[in-house]
Every structure is written in structure tokens, then in C-alpha cells.
Image (cartoon, rainbow, N blue to C red; front, side, top):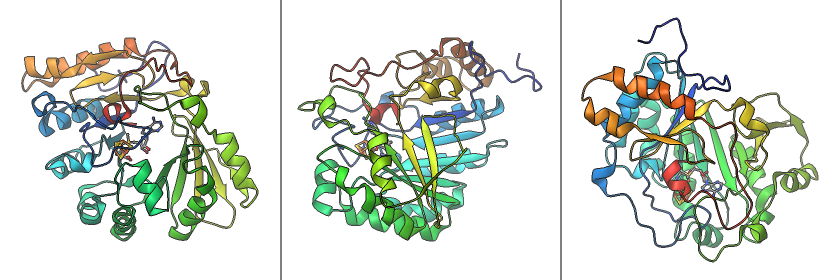
Length: 334
Ligand code: SAM
Ligand code: SF4
């Protein structure tokens, strides 16, 4: 049995798991070139956890000490009635941070209801400020819709908004300064993400396109003053304050192993698998547990505690095209 005084979510390397990321769907209205193939097969709807089951998993984790949940996808806002899930999670006692990652395309209408449901912060992906490029990278996305989504998020009153940009050589690497200036003008933060080798993407050689955080940082230093920040989220991000602004710049470098020692997170896939590491295949099937014990939270909690033993010490990313991980990012939820 689980005692309240004991924190049960500790893995065999003594790392506490306090952060759950939930991918609510693998579907999306974009097909970003680094995230998906052009022709994707998505999970049949019947294989997804229901919104009630997703909330049930969230509740189990929060009752065992998780304080932060990020809802992501695929594009979380394309999941039908997803607001209901946010409203349920937003009411969980003990959950300090309910946050979301979105491509922003549906935020114009959804920003305020999400904020009212208890979402504290949102990350919005923005890889380019040029409509033609934006459409190419996202294979059809409409930049103006996303910009309107960002505006709605600013008005809705979230505690913080962060832009996420995946930088790829010859696609958008010449926009890093403009993207930072845009973030400063909006009073929001921005993170640059190194492309991770997930899924086998046709016609792409990731060695050629890889653009490192170090390269971006050097370029930004020619224009901005970057002051290192001690802040950490237990993940692969390193943050800097930009002098004389409200804006912080993060660099997410999954190719460095350093952050694994402090990893505090696990991920739930849309079909109910709990992934213990983004860069490894270790997982357990929570949907099976939920459906064989309807309405009982104890077996679910025991399965989650047992899964902690499977959390690997570190990821094994390689910067090459023969990705060892065949899952696409839209499935694992970034
Ligand atoms: N659809 C939402 C969005 O785009 O923000 C949420 C899901 S998306 C998978 C989460 C984040 O993962 C996005 O910021 C996206 O840019 C990033 N991402 C997707 N594929 C990636 C890859 N192969 N390497 C690094 N980041 C990736
Ligand atoms: Fe969709 Fe986000 Fe993947 Fe782009 S990165 S295809 S917006 S899930």
C-alpha cells in the first residue's frame, strides 16, 4: 500500500519523478518536417485512452507526488473536447503546474478557456516569422493563425508564455536573431531546440541539418547580452536572461548526456503506454491495467511504482539517420 509520508516515485538511480507529460493525441493539423513523415498513419481512435482515463492517470500520479503535468501531443488542441481534460486536471489537489505545449493554430479561441481551466503556462512552437517558410517547415501551417494564437495567449493572462523553435541549417538558421527580437517585443521567453533523431524521416539526413545550441548562442551573443541563469527544470534546457529585457532564452540540447542525472519526468503516450525515457524504448502498458481494474486506482498506482524500476540511466541519441528510436515525436509528445 502507498503511505502518504513516503514518496513512491523514485527510480533505481534515486531520481524522484515529479513531472508527467501527457500526449493526448498523435494527430496534428501540421506535418512539421522534423516531427512527422508526409504520409502518417495515426492510431485508430479506439486505441486512445479516453479523456476520463487520461485524467485518471493524472490523478494517480498527483496523489503519488507529481506536481507538474504538461499536456502535449501531436497537437493537443485538435483532440475533441480536450478542454474537459484540462478542467479535470486543473482541479487536482497537489498539482502545482498545469502547462501545455501547442503549435498555436487553435489558440485564438482556446487560450482564455484554457487559462480559466487552470493552465498556468503555455509553450507555443514558432520556427519562422516568414509565412512561406513557416508553411514549408510545417507542411501547410498558416503563420498568421499562429500569430493570432500568440496574441490571444498574451491577452488571456497566462503566468508565462514561451516560444519553441527547432533550428535547422539552411531552413531557418538565419532567423535566430529575429525570433529572439520577436520574443523581446512580445515580452515572452524563447527556447531553441536541437533536432532529435526520432522516427525515420524520408529524404532527410540529420547530420547535414544539425545546428547546435552552441552555434545559436554564439550568434546571439553578437547582438544580445546573455546572462546565465541557475534555473533548471530537470531537463535538457539551459537558460539565460537577456539583459535589459523580460525575456529568457533557453537552449534545449538533447545531444548532451549531462541532464539525465537529474531527469525527473516520464511520459504517457496517447494509447496509454508509460515511457520512462524519451530516448529509450522502456515502457509499460497502463491502458491494460486501467481496463482490467475499472474504477480502481490502487492497481494503477502499483503499476506506476513498479515502472520506476525500468527508468534507464540515460538516453542513447545518435545524430544520424538510422534512428534507434522508431517513434515519431508526435507520439511521444516532445
Ligand atoms: N504540436 C505541439 C507543438 O508543436 O508545439 C506539441 C507537440 S510537439 C511534438 C512538441 C515540441 O517538440 C515542439 O516544440 C516541436 O517543435 C518539438 N519537436 C518535434 N519533433 C522534434 C524533433 N525531432 N526534435 C526536436 N524537437 C522536436
Ligand atoms: Fe504537429 Fe507539433 Fe509535430 Fe509540428 S511539432 S507536426 S505541430 S505535433
